[in-house]
Image (spheres, rainbow, N blue to C red):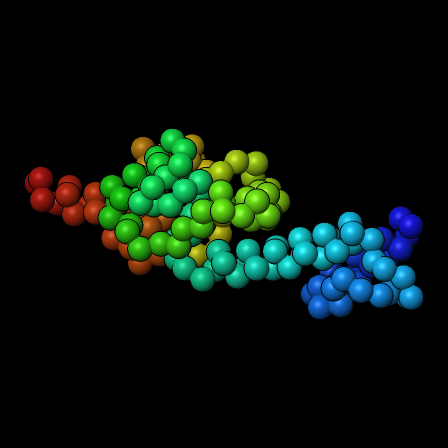
Length: 157
């Protein structure tokens, strides 16, 4: 059984999960765990595409208009302070597979998670630290986003 699972999973990964659908393999039903692993491989591929689709991507609890935890709210507020209003936000509370899958994808155990140009930045603590030490302004500039805090600084001089 275990060897069958490993072979099936390897086929799944090599094929990009195209061959991993519920059904017959070698005349037998695939184990449920093999189907799960294939679905997980699909999710990881989808996540790779999701984080590259927009310059700024946030996986959070709730939405930017209605964050459902303090850490997600802090990320939204930090981005708002910098004038970053246009970004992709995914509510992990709506999809348990997404919630767990993004943790595996980033190898980071908590939500929210922030990505810039497809690269994992970190969670709330990292974004807050970047905001406090000025690194966030520089990282946003690399994305072609001029931080609103720079504009406010120019106006005060």
